[in-house]
Image (cartoon, rainbow, N blue to C red; front, top):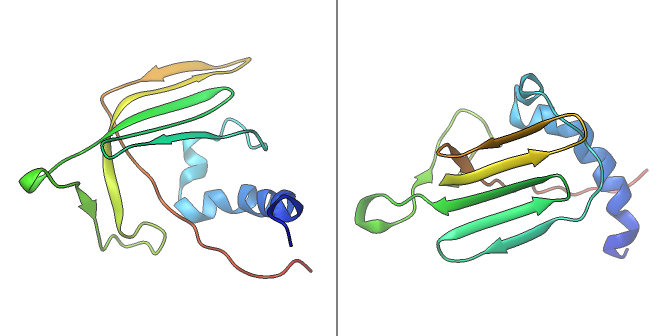
Length: 118
């Protein structure tokens, strides 16, 4: 099946699953869930991604011997083996909310799914 054909189905599933995947995420106050274009720029030392109302700019956090900081063995199956970043800026500008943060930390995670639509 072409990726475009299943995208609405997977989007619907992921919007329902996000609070469960990250455990407690619903307390953070999800601003919205909708299908929008996602722009991603990644280099050896930087990660940027944005959607129409929000943007994230992060630098790799380096540790011993200038290697990336890797997080392992947390007590959640969805939070395994990820790279820690330091936030350059996280921003959002919507119709009713606007914010900008810097100097925090961030991470990326990957969700693998499989199955069939019934």
